[in-house]
Length: 396
Image (cartoon, rainbow, N blue to C red; front, side, top):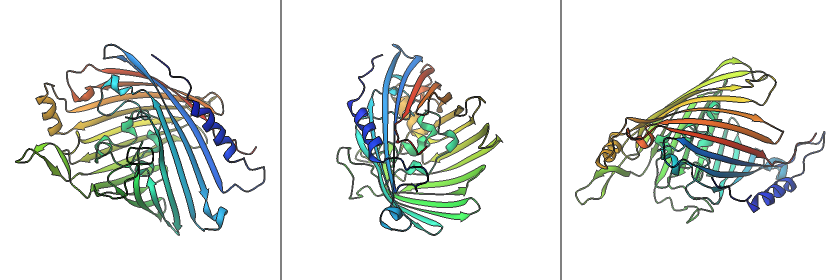
């Protein structure tokens, strides 16, 4: 396993983060501008199931800034959000060979990107956001699944694998408009319309302003609180290429890409001030013709403060399965494979702060039928995540 030298931009980025905004003195109002910087580094390796066994080092730098426009210039109810993202290092899934990935900071092409840049306007119980927007920040997301490293726990694979260049999620977003309405008593409804082709500054071609591939529309409604139940649906305006079907001239048949999902979370015990346990369950379905997946599900548990003497400790266990469509299985069979009904995984992870700024998180995953192939040996993936908070210190 090889480790790249410490990126030169890390020291510079941390200096910028610390110098950009000084912490407010005690008793002073919060500044209009707040910034944050978090550096994440993973060492991830396949310890069983492939030869030769190998590991990879990869990292992720998040730089965010939020400007309260009411405090800054008197623009009531408005906020400007910017988020830059830099990824470098290797690709552990090149070794693991799974369909859904094994590490949620892995990218196809390492580079610096302007991940988000949006303006939000509050309108009473509603708010509107417009700009480069991360769909997964508010849609198809479970807070209780956030500690797990497998990408399927971030957003269902049946949606993550769609679109001409992927939907508007990590690591590249798209231009969009999101409307959120607070219906009272913990109820909400939100909808978003986004460019079907993702692309940001830093990607080849940059931001797509033409919307030539149509739009992706997503809607979700539900309740929040100790118990959360939500349901959502998504649909592309332009038809996508069928992964198997071809027309009379050999060109791919184009199908309607669409799907739906439900989410649930429930507090099992405890409270936010002490040890707390929460369970989550997600189920998604899709057309099954334009991606390998016709659906999937994820379930798990998050226990906060499982060690009484460690107030920042967290323990999480998750189960996930990406259910494969008939057309993908037929393609795999034609290629000489023996297709499985699904690619499945189990994950166990523990996170704890060593200091106010440094967090360590060991992680273990078991992947069954990697790549959707019954002939593939089960994979065991071990990882260690280091997270360093480089944000300016709050006022004492």
